[in-house]
Image (cartoon, rainbow, N blue to C red; front, side, top):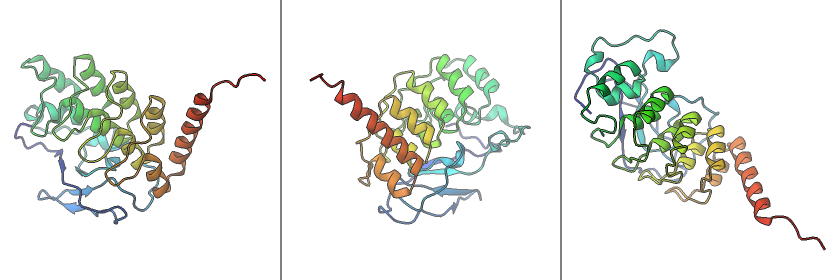
Length: 256
């Protein structure tokens, strides 16, 4: 990513998972710039209420995520753009959903559509991580490759599933991305969706054939996570899916 100093910092850094299964969830830590961050890992902890699809719902990974949001990401009607908007990189523009400025950057050429930053995140991966669906749709139409993986095998689908952005998950699945991609954080899109208690996202992934048997590094399957965390709606979705698979495998019974 280009070295800029935007008014709204966008930080997405990783740490190697160190906590054991069942350890309490890490509390927020403070970064040098003073913004609160939360480190979240893919293992059972105290059950949490179902969260809205927001930046704060990036649960279930070892990603360290800034809680500093733009006005528009907070849900405010008026978006206060930084005075130095022109200095933002294409990755920052994609993450913030600044579509008009993003288009201007792409028109300059230089094959920017799939350009990775220092972590291997493309503009599409950033937009997917922050739930910017119009930006995701635009980037896909302009030829962004949804199959590209970042340096630690993070994918646009995994990050969209982590945030519970079901519409973005659907757009990416239409492009035949690997639904069971396993990243070096120890999770698949389905595992991340379960860990985030994103019921509709879990439904969408299961409907498209997500593997229920893949385990996280902790040894937990999607159902194990749902049970351990007390996510009853997610459990119900998984149970219903298993029953459908069971009945479809039985097939019609032969007449006596």
